Structure formats: structure tokens, C-alpha cells
Image (cartoon, rainbow, N blue to C red; front, side, top):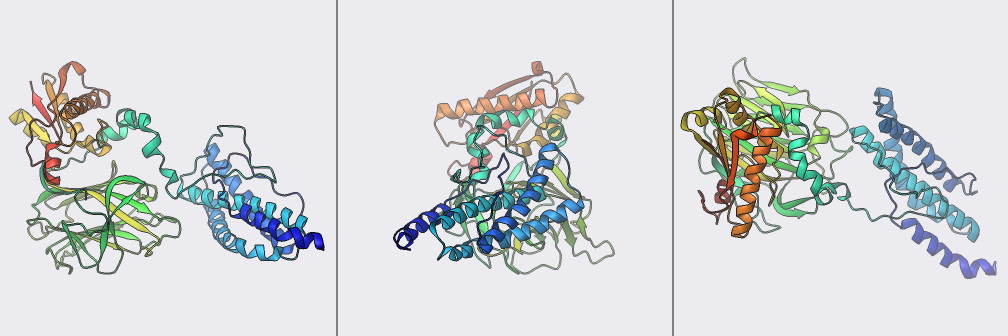
Length: 519
């Protein structure tokens, strides 16, 4: 007993320290179930139940690695397992109190088994969520380490943004992905942004923590930075009747485009099926709903495919109130780009490169409907977050082909590149597609492609960047649309020929452009 009184508390403190160390989420080899029990019922039950669920999840993980799709019964098992995992994980700290009064050897064995069970729980929770979302890919093991020993714990420093390593570690891969990946999808992407900029906000001119200066609301929101993505982002707040209005000078024309990026945090399996971003086109620029409007809602719930809702207030028997089948669960949590084209009564919406909505008369009264509003609803306060960036509204977006043929020259700021890079963003391929169609229609046409930048950065840097961007567009025409490269030449003018005020966000956006000139 004297031995216990001298050493049990320091050793227990050590075991507790081991227990709370961060544990690795990634598993490449199966964690071994302990062969013997501890003799403490709460510990033995916790370990047994943890590994019972772990074995199920690991089996389905093997299916994913083999490319075997899950059926409805498998999904039900995983959903039930995820609920049980949450309960078990919450109960883990309470089990420690049951170690008091036990001899030091039993305390040590119990702590090691709890550590191993906790590791299995972490793996199971993460993997079950990924399997249910269709995102699971078994990582290849890079060394010969395993997680099977009873007295070892492979610690890793993980953060909530650790899954976003693509932004920082795969620059070489990204440099080539704009042309060589998903060529068939890119070649069919038909969104064309407007060519007359009406509004642009990337929140770069706003102070962190402030409400953005070019917006209005009857609620709250703030500009933030996040380590998941570059730049400033506008955090919207969820709530009933809360509206966010970009301060556009005039009513929108009858033909225009809207584009913006979305970033999420905390959105997962518990997210409600009612969690949606409402994009409203209304007859007024206030916080009340107009009598004449049309809207679309983007779903964020992750435990089911909830569809895109479309509605309008048409008083006739042509009123629209429908939900379009669309499984965009994976897209909405991976920084999607949203594109909308309004051409009088016609309304189209793309999520990344895929068109989900194309309704010929959703905007049933174009003369009245001309104001943009955002509303966020169904998100848990302080747990689930939605941010937007790069809101761009532009007049036009109809057909650049006729203008190029008739005038021999077009200029567009709708071809977007990664910041400081010549990597073409995929949402730009609608314009490049139209240029390719002109070249395919008349094989005698030759084009000069000229890149322009804003004034950020040095003159020499901007000159080189503008030339690289023009060359990237040329290569996209050659590799994606199979245009003979001898018909294309590229050049760059840097910041030397501005068309907008480089001291403003809108002016800079206008200056970042690409020209196509018939030769």
C-alpha cells in the first residue's frame, strides 16, 4: 500500500497526459483490438464497443479503397455507427474517474487500452463521415509505421483546416490542372460572364472585423481572414428575415451575370436539411420581400441530397415552386464558384462547371425584378459558418462571338486567373469556348491574344504576368478545343493600358482583362 501511495498519483498524472495527447486521424493499417480485458467494467465496455464500431467502419473503408459503392443498407449502418461513435466519444473522459483506487499496473494497462480505443474512435468518426459524403480515399502509406503497438501513439499536429493542404502544397499540380484535367467538362462549360462591370467586391479594402463598406443589412456580419483560403471573406449570419444587399447604384438591367465564391466551416453531417443560402432577385432594394421576385436556394445539408429550390411570385398559373434534384454536398464544402446568368426571363445557375438550373421564365417580370439580396437560414450559430468572396455583377453575358466577328476585337475581364499566377480558373472556360467556336466556324481567322493586369506589383512583374496569362489562354484553345496553334499569337501589355481606376477595387477588376484581336 505504501508503494501505491508514493507512486500512483504521479503515474496516473502521466497516464492522463498520454490520454489527452492529440492522436493521428489517418489510418493505413488496422488498429489491433486488445487481446485481454483490464478488469474494470467501464473500461472494458468502452474498449469493446469502440472496436466493434471500428471494425464495421474499417470494413466499409476497405470497400471504398476497392471502389465498391455502398448500398442503402451500408449507409444505414454507417449512419447508426456515427451516432454511436459520438456518444462513446463523449463518454471517454468520465471513464478516467473509474481508475481511482486501482493499482498502478491496472491503471497503466487501462490507460493504454483507452488510448488505443480513442484512436480507433477518431479514425472511425472521420472515416464514417467521409464515407457517407462519398469523399473517402484510403491514403497510401509512406513508411512502415503502424498503429498496432500497445505502448505507442503516433501523434500528429492536426488543425481543423488540415484537409486544405492543396492550397499550399500542390502548386505544381495546380499549375497544370487548368488545362489538362477534366477537358471534356471544361470544353462544354457554357457560362459567359457579362462584359460591363456593375459591381465587384473582394473585401480587400475593408478592415477585418468590420461590416463591409459596400453592403447593407438588417442583421450583422463581418469581414474575416481564414487559413483555409486567401484574402478577405465576408461572413454572413444565419437568421429569419436577415438580408444582405450589395450597394449597387442602379437597378440591374434585363441581362446580367452574378458570380461569387463560397467558403464553409463546420458544415458536416449534423448540418440541418434547412441550411440554405437564399439568392433573391427582388423588385425593391430594401429588407422586405417584394411582391415581385424570384429566388433560388443552395442547400448545405450533408446527410442527404436535398436539391436546389427555385421559386417565383408569378400570380398566374405559371408560378414556379420546385426543387430540382441535385447532389451538390461535396461541391458546397469545397469552396465552390457560383455563376448565374439572367437573360431577360431566362435564369441559369452553375455550381463550378456544372449547370444545375436553366428555367426559361423564372424572371417572369424583367422590368420589375432587378435587385439582388442574400439570406442565410438554418445554420447553427457559432458552429456552422458561411463566407462569400469575389462578388461580381456584370451587364451582358450573352454572346461574344457576334461581336468578335462584326467588330474584329473584344475585351473581357471574365477570364480569371489565380492571384499573381497564369493558372486559368475553371469558371473562365465559357468565354474561351465561345472564342473557339468563332475559330472553328471560320478557319481563315487568326487571333492575337493580349493580356493586361492591374497596377499591383512591379512593372516588369506585371508585364511578364500579362504575357504568361495570354499564353495560357492560347494553350487552352490549343489543348482543350484543338485549335491549330499557328492561328494564334499571344502578347502582354502589363499595367500600361488601364481602362479603369487602379485605386479602386472595381477599376482593378476592369484592368485585369484579356483582348482577342482578329489579324
